Image 1 (tube, one colour):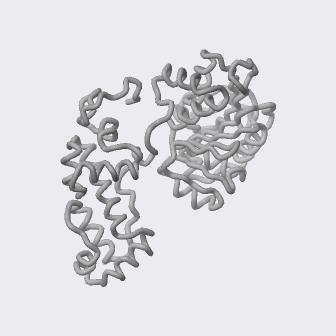
Image 2 (cartoon, helix red, strand yellow):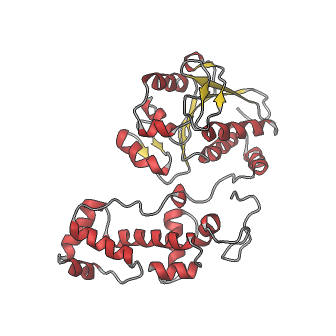
Image 3 (cartoon, helix red, strand yellow):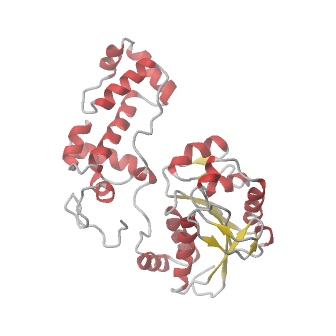
Amino acid sequence: MTNGTGRVHRVGMLVFPGVTMLDVAGSAEVFVEANRYGAHYDIALYSPDGRAVRSSTGVHLAVDGRAADAEHLDTALLPGSEGVATAGLDPSLVAAATSLANSAPRVVSVCTGAFLLATTGMLDGRRATTHWRHAEKLARRHPRVTVEPDSIFVTDGPIATSAGVTAGIDLALALVEDDHDAALSRDVARSLVVFVQRPGGQSQFSAPSRSPIPRNRPLRDVLDAVAADPAGSYSVPELAGAVGVSPRHLTRLFQQELGTTPARHIERIRLEAAQAFLDAGHTVTSAATRSGFGSDENLRRAFVQHFGVPPATYQRRFSRTATVGTDPSGTEPSSTEPT
């Protein structure tokens, strides 16, 4: 569908008891707003049995029919819920997701809707993403899917998946751009006061201390020591000597239990510490010193590499004490940056 053709683009959304309201409303709002700028999206809601459903917020959603009866869709959208990631999926919901997905040439999921989409088999052999909290679980349940846990959204052929909740808005804007052009997508983003393309990946929004707890006592002792004083000096020989093992054995433990090298894992611990310091309102310089990076530039390089944004930008978004509208780096924030 190209801009100006006037052809109606039919979007069918699957809703079900407990569906995350923002997964549905956020994407729908983008499409409706696009209609103000010349698009022609028509949105229909479908449930497994054709009955109204109660969303995660308690709001009841009226529907246009059963998912099995949906026809002539251009895009099928599968939102998520906490339940589809943490509990067994009802066969009727799986059947509805499969039916709706098969009724459209383009299929997208929002947040944990990727679990529904994966059950259809359409993600097999493709790249996908979901909310960072559930990315590892998606990869375990569906090993044929290549999960990209840090992506805001992933497009692989006619299939697209987005990360947690508001990332569905990012994906919907990208779909509008694909259907029309970048100018129309920018108009919609400006009207909704959101990014056209959000900087950085979703790891910047995830919680620190996500590292698994090692089973091996020497390795746990090493990580406890680093976490207690991330600014300390930690060469592999020093760490190995402190816990009474050889440097080679310690390196092997890191690979076996954590799948990485000592240096890389220590950097991850320091990054988590730096995030915590920035969240508490420390300056970038103070966070760099206290977390063991030593300099602003070292911390900036690590942040950009792992999170896609510099520490000052991260702090502007997440610090509990930063002054609203002021960037600690001294750069004026964008007037359209969401809070």
